[in-house]
Length: 225
Ligand SMILES: Nc1ncnc2c1ncn2[C@@H]1O[C@H](COP(=O)(O)OP(=O)(O)OP(=O)(O)O)[C@@H](O)[C@H]1O
Image 1 (cartoon, helix red, strand yellow):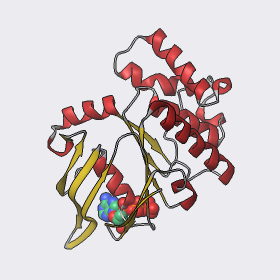
Image 2: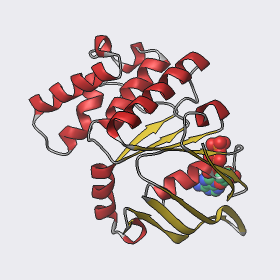
Image 3: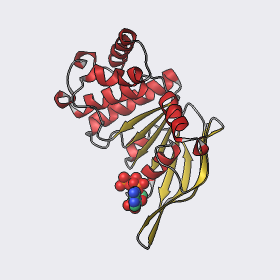
């Protein structure tokens, strides 16, 4: 379960203060697909970054399975993230000089896992996300939909409990968006992983179990689908 209380994020520049998150309380169960919807600038990415420990809130606490991640030291937080979380971004964030399978296996190698086993596991996962035939392609030779499948495989390779996705379909056409969301739904159903997806695309939220709507740094509505 993810539970955040009183999350506030204030950006300060010179004399100006901007409240990107304003006393947000949010909670959702594990194993769900959760969408965070809202207009540009409403604080969606800031919320995702604070919930996932990428960013520190100005005040408030985030509990993941009852562990308060806001009070963890940087090294402990990094370790917690590597072991328990995967990330998917709008522009895929693949490493250009590594091919698809090398991108996918990288998190395992960072964790010191066996090279041969890591390669086998990565190839299996590329097969599962439907692009084993592109395993040795470099990112520049992949279509947007293919690159996002590689990024999803990379996010899932260390079997994280939670996958955070910031506009995962934001740079894809509607056919590829639908396919990527169908894949996320299938993976969620088979593995029981929690997916938290920031989007401003209402069609993406149709794949969710729960939708939170944001406006001006606050959660203004919550719907169970
Ligand atoms: N580092 C920063 N310094 C100052 N202001 C920031 C910073 N990061 C974000 N903001 C502001 O906080 C607000 C929320 O930003 P955020 O990126 O969370 O919105 P969003 O809902 O994800 O928007 P979008 O859909 O356009 O990505 C915006 O007004 C943004 O300008």
